[in-house]
Length: 166
Image (cartoon, rainbow, N blue to C red; front, top):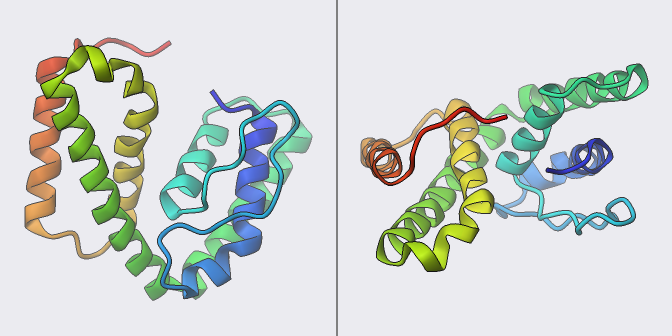
């Protein structure tokens, strides 16, 4: 799991680029910042990635200083979300479609060869979580995409044993 500083850094750098990113045609945006020492490089900025990192931070007990920093970042994100609402929604819709295809591809690859793909699950399931966040931000997800997601969820439940995360 990413460290608190890693996620705070990603959200902070994402916020710094958010307006330019929202107004671009790109679904994924290169962040030019270095991640904390010893941590992997930051992934490309996307709404799904930003919402996931923000949710991970929100699920943690943060020290007062970091909690205050997160609150400021959330305020900045919400300000951009409100000001650039149409761009935000369109970006969420486009990313939803792209991530749905990637999630579908993983599920199909797993079904064809579970042993060769099980090690990817921890990484790939983050796409499903991002789909959840993106779906809430998008206003026009096609019925076909909604049905595809529901079908993929049924497959997932059929091939994995449900359990409680710790």
